[in-house]
Length: 93
Image (cartoon, rainbow, N blue to C red; front, top):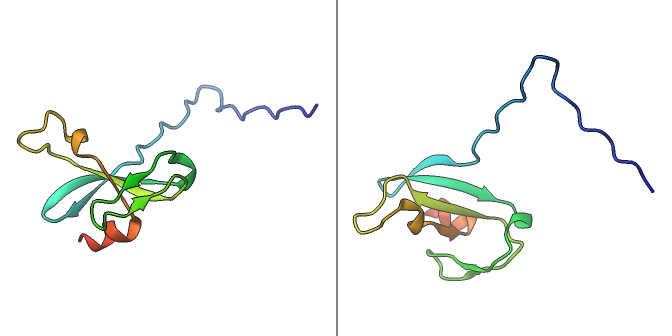
């Protein structure tokens, strides 16, 4: 049975670098949006793109975006999270 390689350890006294959030803020349609780009391996469900209304099948790289500020009737901005094709999100600008 193959042996696993040990993980590299941080130097003595050093701390590992904190992971940065994959979310970035972009301006689209006069609003600020949190944007996360997903790889195909991290998506397991079928989503419908709000721009073209076509499905985004599992295993397809795509964009998840939600507004920085919540809408008036939403309890949370994450409720407005939508999954977009990369090209559809780019065209939104």
